[in-house]
Length: 435
Image (cartoon, rainbow, N blue to C red):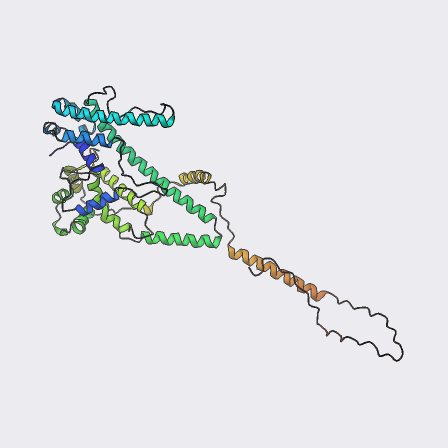
């Protein structure tokens, strides 16, 4: 049944998980779990990927319209492009008065929420300069729900989803640059020997992470047949595109939404990321999953409604005639930022952290070389001292004139010093000796 496509699918993906069927439920549940990003490098709390301030209002409007059979009948003649553009609003005139009253009540509740929010913001700021007019409803009519309300709600929801995807990519780039900046700063505090050891350990970690089975191209025949065989536990030779599509259309609306699509990537993601492996970053797994989703949307979603219809899926499946899977380069094989972006970020981050101008400057002299130089200096000092000892002329003591009284024995003479025997001197010790 063709439901209120422009909003109902968004709600199913953002707020309410679709009803489960036994088949493919495990994969869908795993995708739903992955749909919530892990905490960021700071103390950021997990949040749903698409979280709107007007979630409750959006959900209420969708539920009201879904329960009107006449309105749903009107939608059957609309294309996805028309729905996305908000053309469904033109059919509001056909709604019963009771439906209009429910929609107007939902709008009134949303206006009350906005009023309280404005009061709190003015109280916090001390002025009203930061107040913005809402874009998801018609502010020209505060009492009734009309065509413009529905059109604005659809357009605002689609625009916000696109903006959130863009923001997610930027946040991930910053997350990776922050990790690199902290790593470079940590390396700069080490001596050469420690630094080389740390670099070797990081290279080994990356090598371990990259040791995985070759990834299949998201949305390719090989990738989807792998889901059929390993995820659905079906015979590979019996793969049927129509059955496969219906099997993974969890809510049975005839489309693959965000959750249903991401459930198809879990087998590929498990090849790269293991939640028990310290070498694997869960934040990177989340970004990898979104990269795959965005790629398949670009590849299959020809009308750009952020949904994959059965017709779009079949058309893409039939277009893959060469039978060769091109594979997929994961995040480990590319940098999400350029050298210029990293350099600029590191400069700003060093100032923010108070690290100083030499935050990433490394010392090229290894500890072993410094120790060898100090030891050589000590040896030279000792050798020079010995040479001075050997070339120094011995000083003969002047014996005092002794007058012997007749009959008295001479004073006892001390034994002569043996030739070559020298007086023992205490050598000066270099402060670095023995270090």
